[in-house]
Amino acid sequence: MAGLEEGAASMAPPATVTRAFFGVPDGLVYPREFAPGDAVLGDLAEIAVREGWATREPPKSVKKT
Image (tube, rainbow, N blue to C red):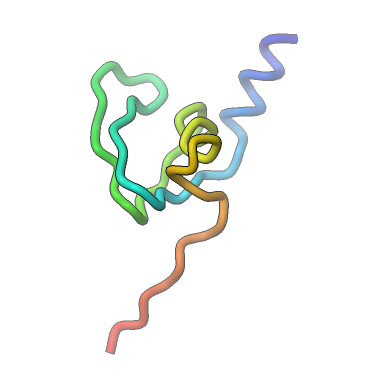
C-alpha cells in the first residue's frame, strides 16, 4: 500500500507559496528558496501546506495597466 500513498502525493495539485521558505524539491539534493507566488509540487507541497507556508488556492492574478 505504500506505493499508493506515494503516488497520491505526486498526483496532488501544486501549492502556491504564501510565505518564503527554504526546501528541497522532490528528486533533488540541495535546498532552494521559494518565494511567495512560486508553485511547489509533491511531498514539498504537502509539507508547505501543512506548515502554513503555502495554500492549494490558485495564485491571485495581478492586473497590469
